[in-house]
Length: 249
Image (cartoon, rainbow, N blue to C red; front, side, top):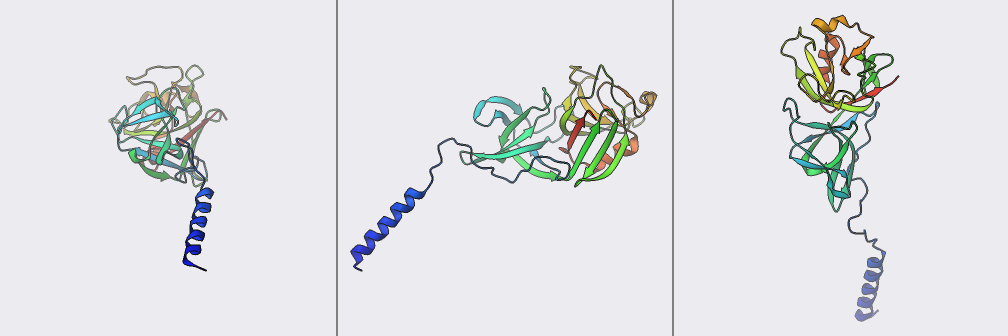
């Protein structure tokens, strides 16, 4: 075969290869950029520490709708770590969808992958309002179960998926909240403010006046109270961002 015919054959092959390339439309959402599984009892969850102030898009394709997310939590200024719900790529950039600690409960937003540091937790917390129990799972295996005080009928503990938002040691372990309060991303659906804060729900201990409400009762303003031994273990063991699923069962 002559050199000229070889050159023409190579050109033809290149043209065919170029035609076989699938062109991705501009602005299209591509396949997930990371292997981010949805939070689950058996698989645990991915968490994202916000390392740069971000604008969390309510929808990935709508840049101007959303809200600001800072690097610190609103109450005690701890490093803000949020539960990751999903991950994707858009226009070559990575994004993660996080559960926000704002009203309405369950609000989520997409933040740039470059603005977070990803981690993981194997833990999952279930709060059962009707049976008034708190159960902690690790890799799907139950590691703790304890009775609880839950929200009263007029100030119910909000249902749905939340996450541990802050870990706050209490200055007086013999006070109403006991030694620890694990604030959640969820807020009361009834109280707009409580105790100087925005009505944020927490899992916390029991001491002082709170002993008047026995475990297994529904008498709180929406928080979940458990004995001090279990809350101390949870505060020591569970990472910020650990999923907390509150059910009506």
